[in-house]
Length: 290
Length: 343
Image (cartoon, rainbow over all chains, first blue to last red; front, side, top):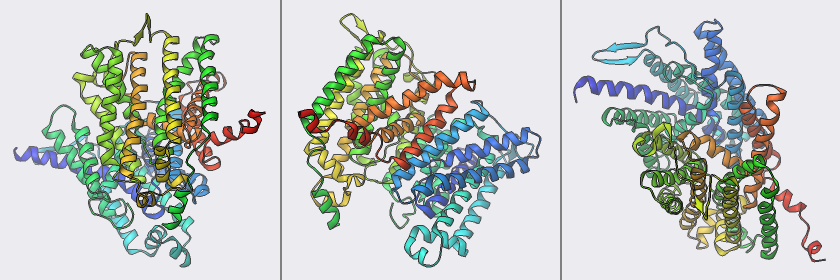
């Protein structure tokens, strides 16, 4: 294998990996604060993409459209917590999973009503569809995907590791009683985690729309991939999610490069599930309950 | 731990009296088997659909309601039955009945292997893993295009036939499906009442059990979980095979995550604690879909698909918030009491 092919595979793996990692971050934010597995996360991503396309086609500049769609999606996240999860905050994890699934159905239905079943796309954020880098070609969107994922990672890492607010949020899941005794409002922190996750999801949606296009039904598949990436790396740590996403993306890019004929999705998913079976708490072996 | 062990000891041996259950199944069977004679083509088509969903949901209830494990990948098991049946009959010219049987064996075998690995994990990870496995199945049948026709799907799958009737005949298909559904219902009810059923309930945190405590008491939890998953896979595979031979066209999109989510929704709304819940859930959801398809175009205009999804979501959320045990306990209470029947 010569250098340009290897570089090509590496770059597309990095691109995919960053997408999966960014998808996984939403699950991390909600899970590490509330221990809820949010199956509507993929719908937030879809919503972010769809709204951005709508605002953009209305003539609003791209970055204002993204901002608007992030705000609206974050509101949807707040609604999910306040009206669906909050009333059931005392029930089991299984109940909450299915509540988020119900929310996923509702969002999907609304999206189908508003936008129909067509796929929609956006132009790349730079006005170039591809960039030549040494001897490899990458999508024009790739620098944005990598850059913004990096920004989100650094932001979350700093927020959860080094700010009072972030530490308070983690405490809600790790030691709910203790957190309450320290005067932390668990409900408010949970609400904030849903808003944050929905907002991040919307950014990811806008980011990947130029690459993959968006339709109403792509929420659940995105959820499945994001959850897998998050669990494989270790859903309770930012590093874990990033690692899981990058591993997933690299495996998919390598199999796509080496094995022809569209088997790369199957093989990558199967390898990831096997890794998860072998390392139940994620590659990083995170502490606490799996 | 001691409390949990005590709880497990208090799990009743039987869920319900055997005779009453047989009576209920008998009445249900008579009802289901006489309805199509008087009904037209449209209601029967709808009831066939209810039958498919009921069988898959019943399988899911064994895993979710009995053993307390989350599965969001039952579409893959349903699809596995459908595709194995389709491949064996179109490519290798097996008899459809033999194909149905072999598909069930194959799907059960796959479930045994996957289950052994999968049930090393518990709780929410299972939700993620089963979703991912469903996606694996979808991509697998989409890319194995020599065998499965890829994204275009398979066509011209031969129908099941018996004594001059084929499953292209609506009534034949109705009876085939519902007789199997009722037999599986009987089996599930007996299973719930048996030693195995009690062992399964001892795993289920939502029925007062606890996996750790059950293990301490000597229940081989891995064995029971895998067995119940295999059984559930066989249910789904039988429904899938009949589906393939009934519609005669299958395509990968049918067996995507949405189907799995829908089946889980039916199990929850119908009531996870009893196989009867499957029929309630499937009947309610398919009924609502038909109503919406009937009235939405007239009221609002346009297709009803989006309203169906919104309705499913709202029903699921409302059910979980206000009726976490589903419809079955309500129906059970409304049934005449033992004394009323005796007198």
